[in-house]
Length: 238
Image (cartoon, rainbow, N blue to C red; front, side, top):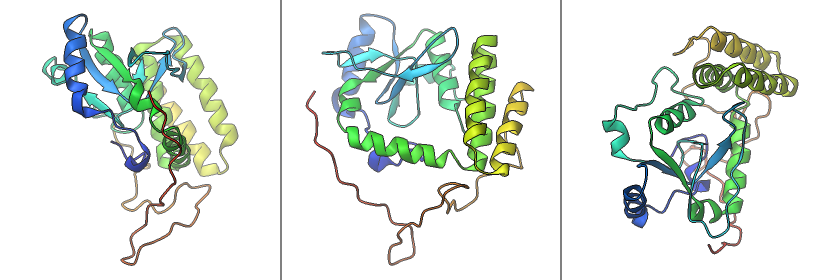
């Protein structure tokens, strides 16, 4: 699981029995390259994505894109030479990898049982993710890397959709530094620049939740930041 969505609030796929299910499903159709507990539908024409809606009675469904968090990969993918692009390393590197996985003939499926198991946890994880992505260095890589993804797998319509997203980010940005990072990411992505930008490096200790809003965090007796204990919502039965 990745640090964008704290593991306490992410639903990992049910590993016990999941591998067996993946082998069974792969034997009757295209091989399954990855199974995930979170994903989105993506319009192949524009690159725009929407939340996945669970189909009644379906345990597994094919999905277009997903995040690293709560994703189980098949070793067959690595054996086929499909590996993450190290030059992206943060921000849509998972989408880039999974798009290539699907275009190579593998299936990406979502485990709807895991997706539905904890609505409250997923909502809190989404809120936390939005807060973290307000951090300047994250904003740079998010904007830059999706521009790279748009240029690799789409056409001008993907770029146009991304420009709409960038315009919304600029309107919401509350600091000049944040706006500069967004524009720099857009320019570098348009130029095809990948890899580390020394101006935008993650600090060794990321004390602030964001550059724009930094709520106080409780600490334990040894001085480390304490993870808040959140109440769980009612468990839905699949």
